[in-house]
Image (cartoon, rainbow over all chains, first blue to last red; front, side):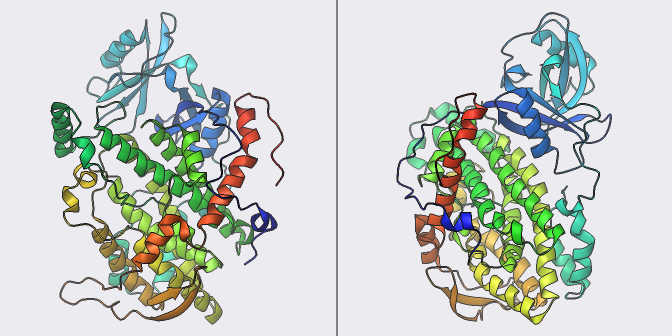
Length: 203
Length: 341
C-alpha cells in the first residue's frame, strides 16, 4: 500500500553498512519536576537530556507537561543535585547563605516531592537544616537539596497545558463512550470481568 | 507500547566470578523486596541484563512509533488524528525515558541509537508487521497496547528502581493508548459490514503477534533463573499469555469477531485461515484455550526476516542520518546540510 512519497522512496540501506557519521556523544542530564496545580508542590516527573537549561525547559514542557494538567515545569541539572544517599554530588557548591530547594522521597520507589526551602552554608548544612525544618524530611528515605537559583522554572504566566479540550489524550476522555459502546455488546458481569485488568492509575 | 518480558537473558556463568559476599547481600536485598538504585552494587550479569532489557524496551518504543506515525495523515477524523499524534509523541517520549535509564547502566544514548539502526540490537518483533488499514491501528492499540499494559504492570513490580519508576509513568500514558484503541475497535464493530469486515481482517493479522508479545514458552524452572529471581520480570511468559487470552478472547467474541488460526505470506498478509477450535472456555479451569502461535515465525522475525524488518530499520537509519545536522547544531558544532535523500 502506498503510504507517502518519502516513505516509499527513502533509501533501503543494508543495516550492516557502516554509518557515515561518527558518534556524537550524549547531552547533559536534567531532572524534571512538574507542578500540577497553582501553588501546589513540584513533583518529580522524570529525566531528559539537553545541551543547556533553556533547551531542557523547552523539552520538559513538551515531554512532561503535556500528558496531564500542568501549571509549571522546573528543570535541574544533575550536577546541581546533592543527594542524601550519595547518588548525586553537587559539582560546584554555591556561596554561603544560599537558598536551597528541598525534595524528599518518603519511601524507596516513591517519587520525589519538593517540600520546602532552607538557607544554609553548603550542601551538608542544607541537608541538616532540611531535616530540622522541612516537613517529612527527618524521616524521608532520601533527601535532595538544590541551590534554588540553579533551578530553571517556567514563568508564572506561561501556558503549558492548553485550555482547549485535550481529553483526546487522556484515558478518562474515552471512559464514558467506551462503556456505553460496550453495553451494546456485553452484559454487566462480562464487562466487569473485562475491566478488572484495567489500570487503576491513569492520566 | 512495550518491550518483551522475555529477553532470553543468560547470566549464570558470569555470576560465578562475582564477590560471594556482595552477591549474597544483593540476593538478600532481592529476597527482601528492596529496590536497587543506579549506584548500588550489582552483579555485572544483572547490570548487563538490565541494560539489555531497558535498551530493548527503548528501541521498541521508538520503532513502534513508526508504523503508527504513518497513519497520522490519514486518520478518519480530527479527534482521531489528534489522539494518534499524541500517542506517537508519547511512544517516542517513552523511548527517551528508557534510554535515560539505560544510560545510567553504562551505555551512551548515541551508541544505543547507532546499534539499533545497524541491527546490532533488537526491538520487539510485533513492530515488524505491516499496518495496511486504519483497523490495524485500532487493533494495535487494543491488543498490543493491552498486552503491553498487562506486561508492564508486572514490570512495575520489579527490582530496579529507575526502571520501575519509569514504568509507572509509562503505564499511566499507556492507559490512554489502550482506551483510545478500544474506542476505535468498538466504533468499527458498531459500524457498517465493510467496517466490521476490515476489523476482522485486522484482528486476524494481529491476534498471532499479540499472543507472541509475551515471548516464547517458558523454560522449565524459569522462576529460579536470574531474570525472575532478580525480579527483572515478575511473572512468567505463559502466565501473562493466559491472562491476556482470558481477557481478550471472550471480549473479541462478544464483539462479533472470530478467532482464527492463520497462515501468512512473506509480506505478512493472511493467505489462509480456519476457526481456532481451541478458542473456547474450559468449564473446569475457567481459562480460555488458544492455538499456539507459529513460534518458527516468531524466531524468524526476531532474526531479522519479518515482513517489515528491513523497512523499519532503514527508515530509522534514514531519520538518523538526515537528522545528524540537528544533532551537530544542538551540540554547538558546525552543522552541514543533510545528505541528499
